[in-house]
Structures are given as structure tokens and as C-alpha cells.
Image 1 (cartoon, rainbow, N blue to C red):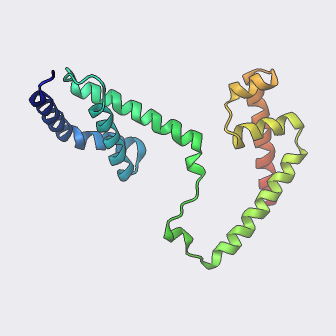
Image 2 (cartoon, rainbow, N blue to C red):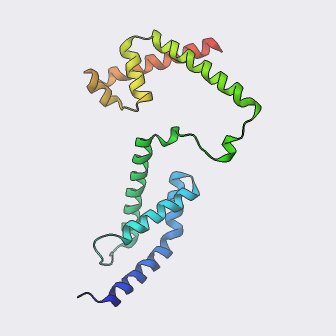
Image 3 (cartoon, helix red, strand yellow):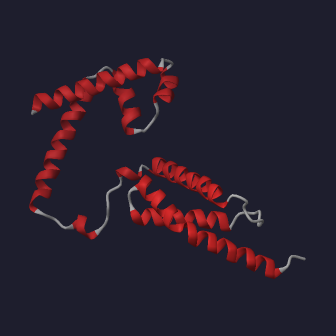
Length: 175
């Protein structure tokens, strides 16, 4: 049977290591994500993962293990954000809900711009349009698109350049 005092001693040692490493870990995350609150959350996630690991033995090189866990936490965050398209979400914070006089104008201009882009997209060759939509709106990678169409990645890049050039030129013509 395991000695309960040993588990308590290991927990105390782990807590001491966490306290010593916390500030540098939060700073490490902050340099990578920019948001201080998110950096705190990510550091906490690291500590939780380490505290909940199956192997209860003390880690020989705690700092190295901590930063390897931090990289894993950061990778998981990026993957989740990518899958959920977090950067495309609209904030529901009160300061973003306050209407101002320019909201209606901005909405109208955005709709007109979207309509022009849709019109330009409809004039493109079908394959170019499809490749652009798969890449920019569906988030597919060039390699996935190339496989789907049975073409090279270079060909996908050329279709994307053509679509972007066409959209850019149409936008410049409207300006």
C-alpha cells in the first residue's frame, strides 16, 4: 500500500515547482499568444496536465518537461482554434454591441463589397473559383485541394494567384 505521506510530499514539491516556474511560463505563453488572460489559462492547463499525469514519480528535469508540456498545450490550442475558426468569430462583449451612426453605413458598404466580390467570383473559370472557395472559405490546404482535383500543388497556387489577382483588380477598378 502506498504511503499517503509520500503523496503529500510529492504534491508539495510539485506545488513548489509550479510556483517557481509560473511567472516565466506565463511570460513564455504571453509572447506567443499576446493575450495575458489566455497566457494565464494556458499556464494553468500545463500545470493541470502535469499534476494529473499517470506517473506519480518526480520528474528529473522539471523545467524541460514543463516546456515540452507547454508546447503541447500551445499546439492543441492552435489546432482547436483552427478547427473552430476562432479568428472569424464576432465578439459578444457589450462594447461591441453599442450601435453608432457608422454601423449602418459600414454594413451597407460591406454588403456592396461582398456583392461585387461574388459577381467577380462568378466570372472566373469554374475550377479557379472552386479552388479559391475551398482554400479561403473552407480552409483547405493546397495539398488537399490538389489531391481533390487531381492536379499539382503548383497548379493550385496558380489558380489561387489568378483568383486573387482578379479580385484585387476588380477592387482597384471600383476605387
